[in-house]
Amino acid sequence: MSTGKRRVFNREFKLFAVERYIGGESAASICRELQIRPSHLSKWCAHFRRDGPEGLRLAGRPRLAAAVELDSAAEAMRAKDVTTACKHIGELERKVGQQQVELDFFRRALRQVGEARRPSDGPGVPTSMPSSGR
Image 1 (cartoon, rainbow, N blue to C red):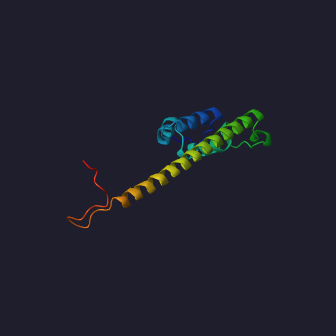
Image 2 (cartoon, one colour; image 1 turned 90 degrees about the horizontal axis):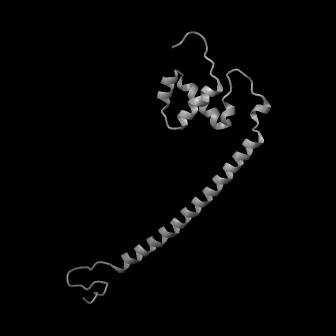
Image 3 (cartoon, rainbow, N blue to C red; image 1 turned 180 degrees about the vertical axis):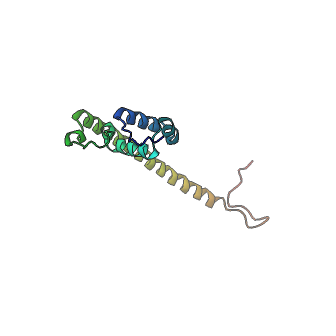
């Protein structure tokens, strides 16, 4: 596999590999098929998570300040995604709170039922609950 020359991967190749990994394909199968090291794929995924497709630059090329900054459209998209995520998180937190209230209610109700239905101390002793009259 090693020819002594360093392979240079273009952005499209890296993006292709990362998208396959994000899509659920195993890292081992991607690396085997594309003949890349797992460390490469791991590094590309980290760069992609941090900077998006712009993070998948050619090796050895210095990052330009302009290239690192997101353009206004991408920034607006991220802001929209963050706003949507915050709304969703708020909804989920409210739901969890409601479920906690319901759990507390049912715990108290179960405790009261358990206290009201104490078993008798022995044979012939009346129970704490009156009979249903049937």
